[in-house]
Image (cartoon, rainbow, N blue to C red; front, side):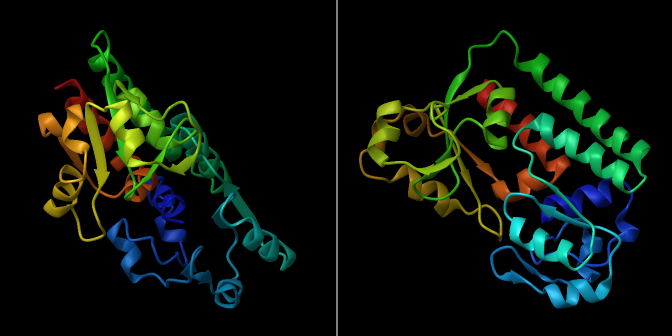
Length: 245
């Protein structure tokens, strides 16, 4: 998974990485590594087993079956599935222990915590704005998801925080909850103006406060934000300034 790949490089263990999944494209050193498939298209287990890695890092929730098959082959597997900023920090430190890179991992998490504290201070004592975050058309998330934590830390309130996980939402419900800020994702090729235009032009959405103010924050893909510890901070700081504007 991209998250595990980026953590390994962040803590200085990139030289130990033998292969990655198809979606791992950061940092740039991953370009020269073998790509062994993905959770969605399927992993090339035969090739992975042939590499005989000392340990394999996977997402415990999405790749549970793969983990079992690898363990049956006698391979060591480390799985994590962080759902909050705190759990991401914990996962980074645990991976540091596994690879004997504890000091580097602690340096990374210390830097993250310092930046998180900076954002918290900056958004304190300011009235929060109501936020609708759209991963793809008609899909959002609620409490218990990492991205929801970021909205809260940045001083916003997710309009669907009364729900959990990922789910479909109706246009009518978004209109009813009347967000002041709309967050949406770009594509793999980056931010496209038509993404914003498509949202602004939806039937009935002209009454939404965010549309009336024409204030929609353009983001890189959520999957990238979720997987990269530095993008996490960049996203959070950008979101903080936007929600507070």
